[in-house]
Length: 303
Image 1 (tube, rainbow, N blue to C red):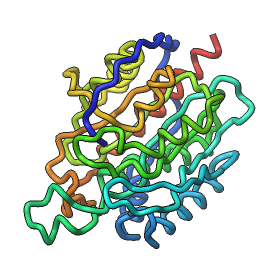
Image 2 (spheres, rainbow, N blue to C red):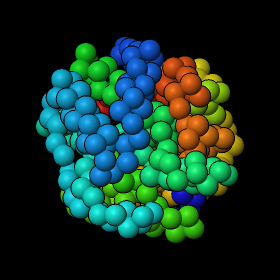
Image 3 (cartoon, rainbow, N blue to C red):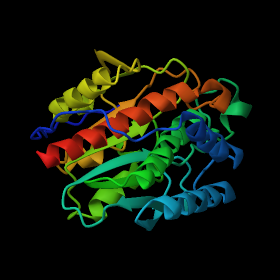
Image 4 (cartoon, rainbow, N blue to C red):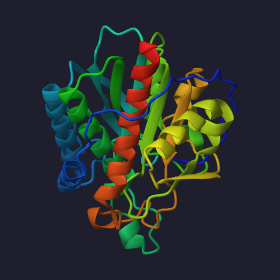
């Protein structure tokens, strides 16, 4: 992800009452999903670890979702000019429901740990436990919860590829998978989208992200309200600088979108981005928040 500015005016989605749902989020199992991804190696596009991770996600979603499909395309990675196959992995729940929400996370790893001071370490790929695997782990476990109790609204879980291969100070070189997804599917108009990114570190603290507040502040407020009802400690009321992340293409398409991201990670884009710096409790809070969002969307449609 990169910090950037996008100024959009969007209508606020009003959701109904009752954030608490009956679905259970298994934090230990979610953390296992995080560890399994890192065990494959850095999921750098074009590598065997990347392909293995994609296959792992497809297998999981085939066992949980109603429909699974790949949005595949070729992409030049700005960081190193390599040309790779990229895949956005899409899991669809309740495909016939006209009212849909989108929950997303990026799954690729950065090819260079360029926040390392040691040049030898900076040339290595980022393991991506927090930056990549954490958001995916949350969505994989959300899928399991939805399989146990299918949603009354349409829910699309999208794992975005090629988010993390950008060039610093060039925002448009980041979040390429989500940009391509939105561009290639102009008729896809979910009621809103929520992106989870870097949500695994110990002591997780998620501020209100600047672009989300500027373009979809009402939706941010609803998400924070749900967090208060669930008594979550990870959400804080301060507003961060704008972040150029996978929610930005949705905002530009005038789809309300929120980025749940904790940028205060000292291991960001280093070789230290490992599971031992992450915590199941952090995944648990974000997972329960997303299930609360789904429950509220369901309640709003039943009114």
